[in-house]
Length: 201
Ligand code: AMP
Image (cartoon, rainbow, N blue to C red):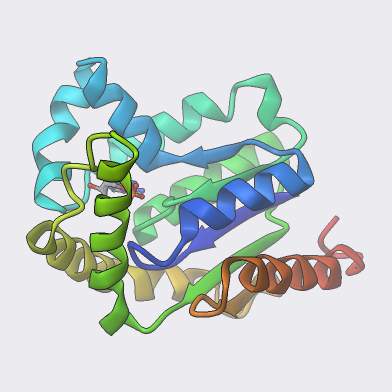
């Protein structure tokens, strides 16, 4: 099962990717998590990505494609994976096609989470206050200003990514405004339909 989860910041990609990863026993590959860990560990990638992430802009394609290329070499991804937050640009989508072609593998599904964006700022504020209540430091980009930039970045590049997959059998969308479990169920239903399709083993 090789999956991509698309959707704006705050749409629930991380939550759903984690649930789907557990259900299908595949690793969740989140470029956001990889970059945050690089920033925390002050690696060269982290130092290059830090300020762009804090501002809510997109980190360079070469950096994130490099992260995914490395991660796909790990053995645990051989049985499948769910990509969360990647690809975010058409260039990344093309690079992913190339990486997968090179390995002789193909995507099972591309899932687009659709949400009412008016409600996203509220969701992000809640994510920040939930983290504070747990005694954790909220993400440095979970604030209204960075969120507006993250949404703008999403709109600048997402339609080209969706367009890249449009017309392929793999692409389907789910209503991200439903409850967490209902969204997961909609995703698993969409996946079962595709698993029975001989063209998408
Ligand atoms: P996320 O956790 O997916 O919301 O990502 C947090 C931040 O990491 C984004 O706002 C970007 O600055 C950066 N980032 C994550 N994934 C990508 C990507 N595929 N391309 C460019 N920047 C990314």
